Image (cartoon, rainbow, N blue to C red; front, side, top):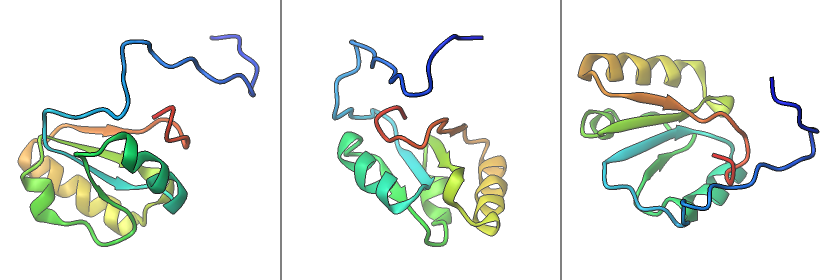
Length: 102
C-alpha cells in the first residue's frame, strides 16, 4: 500500500502534455457537471455525454469507451455496458473525481 497523506496531490506525469489529443475515437459517459466542465478542455477531441441518454451510434463507432460512473443513472450504465459487449469495444473507468487526476 502507498503511504500518502489524503491532501497530498499526485504529481502529473512529465510526459503528458495537456490538452491531450487522442488518435482514437473515444467516448466518455457520466460525471458531474463540474467534472465535465473541467475535463472537456483537457481532452478536446473526445466526445462527452453527461446525464443524457447514451448515444448508441457513438458507442458503436467508438474505439474505446470511458465511464465516470460516480454520476450516472443505473439505466444508462447498463445500456452502455450492453452495447459495449455487443461490439467488443474496450471499456475503461475513471478512478478519480478530479478531472486533473483523470
